[in-house]
View 1 (tube, rainbow, N blue to C red):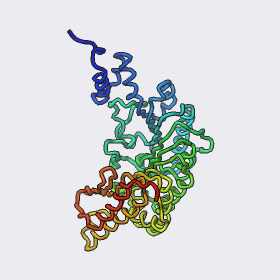
View 2 (view 1 turned 90 degrees about the vertical axis):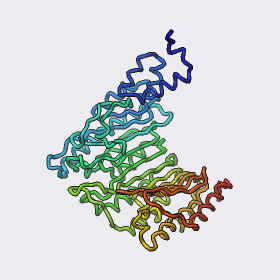
View 3 (view 1 turned 45 degrees about the horizontal axis):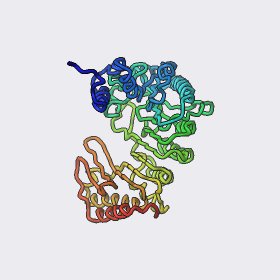
View 4 (view 1 turned 135 degrees about the vertical axis):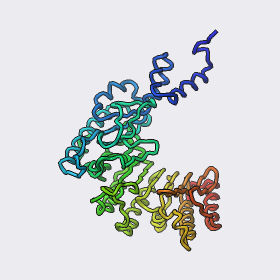
Length: 424
């Protein structure tokens, strides 16, 4: 005789329910099977919500009493289509800014009424539906059936294919005035994400202004662009202004900062140019200094391509830094390339970076993980320290022999962390 659902052991029933999201598109319809299925499926169904700006007004009715289930809210702001030529027009930029401002205002007014409790990630993205193939559903749930991630640059690789863009004017426009002062504070948000795939440049004061409206914010993830077209000359000033403002606006609640500045290697020749050498010395002295100050107050820091890892460690040494809170550190280093290793002194240069990192790690009593990495077309690599396994590891498409001096330096770190000294 066929046994019913309730005859199955509780652990088997739970395993089945947790496997449903990985089955096929439309799995959320199974919520109608029974009340137990509905309760469990809703946890997965409402965990991550993607909302188009044109349907923001429906968000409240859709969520209602399920607000505690929402852990990640991703707003896709729909920008009007650009001029056919793809050229940058100030009138078009003003229009886009009005659309962006209205969407942010409506979103913050909605979220200001959400109950405080638990964790909530707010992610912002903007795109012209005509710019990329594929349009997402108006309000989408995480049911495995939404094929619209391409529009907002959220493919599995997390990188947008710029060859699909019909124009780039939306990328060169920027958020200038969002009426920050009139926005209500949002206490529900604990993590704020603006990825590189956002087709609007967040001016530093706008980004920091939004941060001040999130008083419970614990984590900030930002992916600024590196040297776009005619704005290359302002690259240094934009980077410095952003980092300086972050330093002054980060509240005590923020413990995690992740900044990934795109290297712009894949940009097509008609609009994007990689910024190569603007004021490298100034970037070292000023931007790296600001990050070194910020890092003292954080538990987790990740910075890619806005600064060089070796410069960061060099800037910290004169200060006799002690990172009492820092648990994880990830920095990109363009020193880590097979081309560097090919030089006569290449191995010495790379080993010096590893030793300098170890010396700084001695002043990080809570450090659990340190990663130095690099990636470009055709190659990638990672040097990592893991406190739990008391090990250093090299992984990459090319090999680097770890010199004895490097191993000795990191053995000191392992010994110090093994002793569990929480104060220096």
